Length: 193
Image 1 (cartoon, helix red, strand yellow):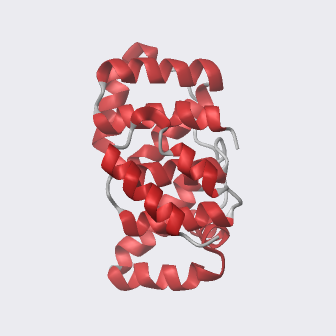
Image 2: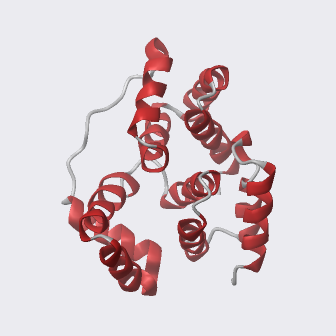
């Protein structure tokens, strides 16, 4: 389950989200040195889904010369096809119902989520889908987005991530407040297997 790597990924994600200057430098350096440039960049790229482009851009400026080199964008399946594939893998038999709820809330945003979030970000190589979901669970708890958090917890469980790992992840990166950890732990324990 690569728990040590998730700890390093979460430390960087938390520093991006919480604007922690000195912790940002340490977390970025640790992740890059231990896991390489591809993992470093994928964590940063995924974080825009949860804390916005401005925080990620601020992070890039803060890291400046410390940024590792990166590969260019690779070509792949269309965003819609890739997004649909990833969405169906994550949501299983619930995929159609979840997708319809998103479309009902706002058709434009629902399509953006499918095309961009799932097709261009979560469907990328570099991080396993399990790691991406575990990081999403932490980011959503840190943002108090409990409805979406439940969906991503179910996705993680569907992918075979044990509840015990998700509970241990709550300590990753010193990201969550004590109240968020307690709420997440309680909700995880109540979640069916």
